[in-house]
Length: 55
Image (cartoon, rainbow, N blue to C red; front, side, top):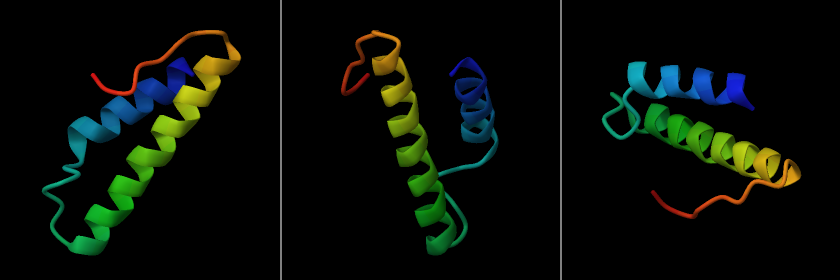
């Protein structure tokens, strides 16, 4: 979980999501953000850690 969060953080800092140069790149990056969030949320649930919907 920690490694995934670190790698996603690096990706998010280096690759603009909403300002992506092409619509298909933006869509792919948004999908990656969504899937990563789901995986992290599920992993934390399995560990018994509550999550919030928004920050």
